[in-house]
Structure formats: C-alpha cells, structure tokens
Length: 294
Image (cartoon, rainbow, N blue to C red; front, side, top):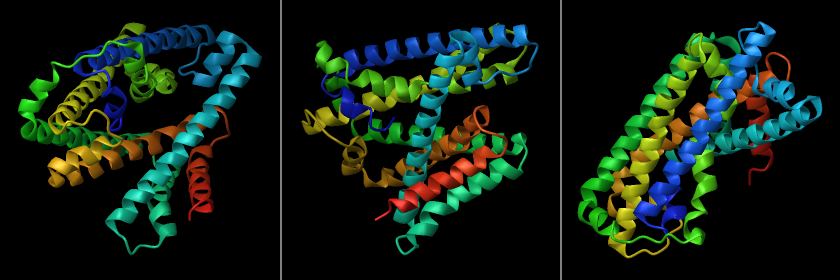
C-alpha cells in the first residue's frame, strides 16, 4: 500500500482516486459474490465452513478447482516468503548487530508457535493488536504529510491526466492491496447466519483500507507536487525527506502489515494440506529466505 502512489503519480489526484474507488468497487462486489457462493455451499453441504479451494472445486469442477488450489498455494507461499524477508529486514535495521539468521527467524518462529499451539481466540487477539498498530501508524503518517504539505496538497488538485496509460498501472496494485477474497469463506463462518451479515461485514471492513489508501495517496501526491517530482520510486523516502521523524510510524505500519499477513496466510494452507501445516509453512518460508540470504 505504501508504494501505491509511485503508480498513481502520472495521473494525479482525481483520476487516481477514481481508479482506486472503481478498483475497490470491483474487489468488494467480487468478494460479496464469493460470500454468496459460500453460504450456498454451506447450506447445500450442511457444513459450518467451506474453504476457498473447496468452493472453487464445487463451483468450477475438480480439474479447474485443482488449478485454483495450485495457483492459490503458490501465491500465498510467495507472499509469505516476502513477509518473512520484510520483517527480517526491519529487525536487522533496528538491531544492526543481530545475526541475520536470528533477525529473519525470530518473529516467524513466534508466529508459528502462536498458530500451532494457541487457540484461535489468542491468535485473533494478537491480530487485532497488530491491526490497531497499523491504523495508528497510517494515521500518524497521513497527519504528518498533511501538516508539512497542506498548501501543496491543494495545489496538486489542479493536475489531472485521464489517459489510460497514466491510470491503468495503478489498478493491479490497488486490487492486490484491497483484496481479501481468500478469507471470505472464513468471514462467512464468523460474522453471522445470513449472507446479509456477511455483506455488511465486507462493506464496513472493506471501507477501512479504502480510506487508508485514498488518504495516503492524496498526501504523497501532494508532497510530490510541492517538490516538483513528476515521478518518484519510493513514496516513503519522499515523506522522510520532508519529515524524518515519521520513520517510526513507517516502520510500525510496515511491521504490522507484514505481521498480520504472516499470521493470516499460513492458515490458508489448512485448506490444502493436513492439520498443522500452517506452522510448518512459516518455518519453511524462513528456510527459503535464509537459503537465498547473502
């Protein structure tokens, strides 16, 4: 999410905001469709929960369902490896003298133990704390950006490029940032007994990241306008160049975002592999990161 403005800078405030909102509408509508399919499958099978891969098999057939399972597992594992490497990098920055093996393994091992040996209520509590840290961090970053670039934020509203070539690059990043399709069946299990409850949870829950993305994008494009940057590669460096004190909030957001993904992604493997696979996937991800460490 923090890197999204580097893809929206060419289009400007209003075109990028329109692309983000339309991408969010697509994401939320498709997630609601998955929720409706989940409730239909639960009712048909007389079960309390269906998996994303199981839903794909029952809807598309065994062959396409197997393809979805393979793609789903590969994507989830790739993201998990990225999370392990990202948190390892953050730990190494905070403790430069720490052994790289320990820096990359310490939090994933904690996450693996949490997932494997503690009840879901405890895992959910840890996840809520991390979500709170993420919200507090992004709020601090947006407030910092607005405080140092209020006038440039207003000035940036005058620029708009509606060319498809300027708008389209941001759409895949936005969809990936806002999407949570794979956990939709689990949402259906915990939110209530009707698809109406699921729709409400998806709309309310999905509105929070939308507000975060829109506010962060607006602030960074405003700062870029102030500095005369037509293009830039790293929005975080841009913010820190005008206020280095924002670094703790940047690290807090990055850690919370990576940690919540690290806790959530491994559980998706319970859909495909036998019980206990979630913790094993975390440890295997650590092994992959360390194997390519140099």
